Length: 160
Image (cartoon, rainbow, N blue to C red):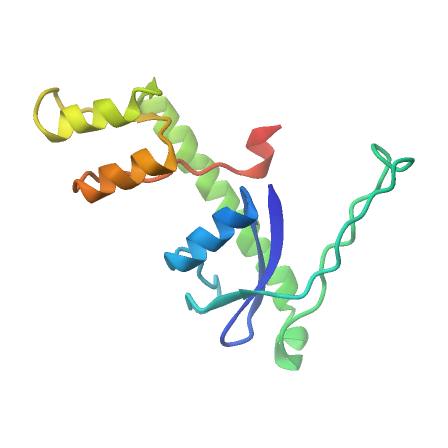
């Protein structure tokens, strides 16, 4: 996972986690990354300091401090950083609730996801809620065929 400091064309600053730098590029290209304040899809990476851990420091490094800067003096006076953190916590809570609901109420078909989704779409199997695994190419193919699919939200803490 990689965390990027981002900003929109209206200079709102925020952060987001991505599976990889290529996942970020893909999501930005498809306009899936939007500003949580204004909804703008014109988002760019902000300048960030790298986190470097020497060989001796592995395992004992302390995480860098959370960014405390805001995009404008007005935002700084209004405490938008703490508001952003609260909004991110609320969003993460909602994503976790959504994921838990799907896992509880749908069948995990694992690597058979693309085949099961196609069979239901074309009427070969009865429709039912499912989730599973699909490669990016499989997901794109399903979408190209008119089959609605969405990635299951995964948060960094779900991977530990």
